[in-house]
Length: 338
Image 1: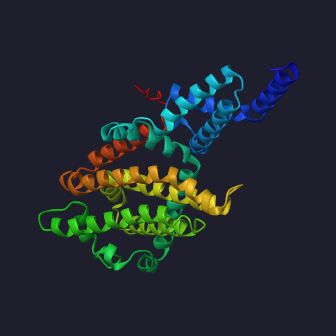
Image 2: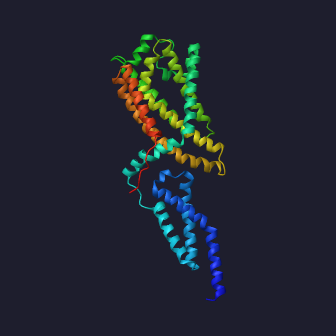
Image 3: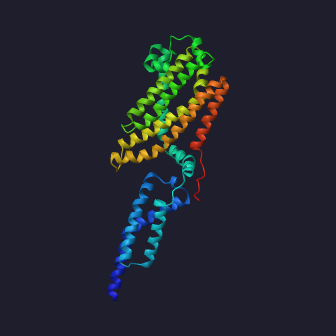
């Protein structure tokens, strides 16, 4: 090969590398990040970028081999492609390992990323509860506007104080009716949490409506019981399971708000692309919300029926809330791969 031909080949090789090296370096950085910790530590954009960069690297490798460019570059691209292949198509974890990873990292990390939306969801829910309490406390006529007949189940301003008291401490004569009432409340809260997520795409409006509606009903109940001197007792009856159940509603609302916000402000993506990307992250939160609702249902179906001491009820509520807050928000060491 003549000297001009060699010089021309080197120039093409340098140009080829300069045009694509930024993508190779980015792929290498993302792979190093995933290999050094966990794929759960990658952002949504980074996870979506790896397959794209992998295909671009394969294309570059094919060109490099066909044109006999720098052999060291070919070796580098082969190594990088192999690492990326293992990440994209490598051995999949077993079902048990996936469950372990979900509870150890995927779910708490997804919740932690929604802290802003969670604060908004919390503020809307309990702001509405405060409004419901104040309105019903001033005028009991508001109660029927906030609480449907099915949920009230006789617990309305016309009920006697004894009846309201007995619903909190179910004796043998009340447990059947209380079980139906508990099931009604659980079904309502579960529906709110799930639909608040599912309807978030409609610019956040259905999500906010459901949070406000549930908050108003919660505040109305507290105002009713407070008017009979039973607010403290109602708090224990509700929070023994409600610390988990209401937290689940807040998270379901936060997931819906994330999707809705991405639709309103999609950035450089289309609205569909932005909602899809937000939905993938928020779906992990909703999957965990279902777990929380099942746990709340167990507390509601058993613990609340068997435990009638107010202080013990509050202690269980405080303990479960502390566990959830620590699980979601305390710093943790990343899980190392095998």
